[in-house]
Image (cartoon, rainbow, N blue to C red):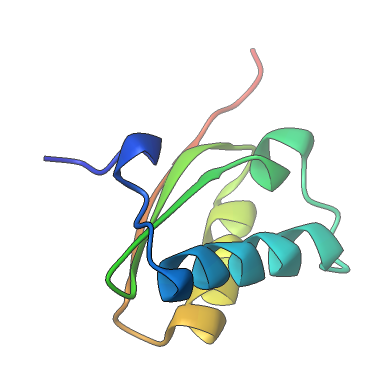
Length: 86
């Protein structure tokens, strides 16, 4: 089953992990789209799932890399979807 926002861990470590990733995205010098800044970040037992739409492959990989820099390599499941405006 794919984690949803309801699956966010309630431990202090999981909440802190989610908060640090969100802060990294919002404070990044990259000009992320509004949708990218609002992706879902779900932390469970130190593992992070990223979900939601982004505007480009570059945003997807960049946000995934930011999350991995906080959570550690191998701890991020990047399920972000590239959505183009048509």
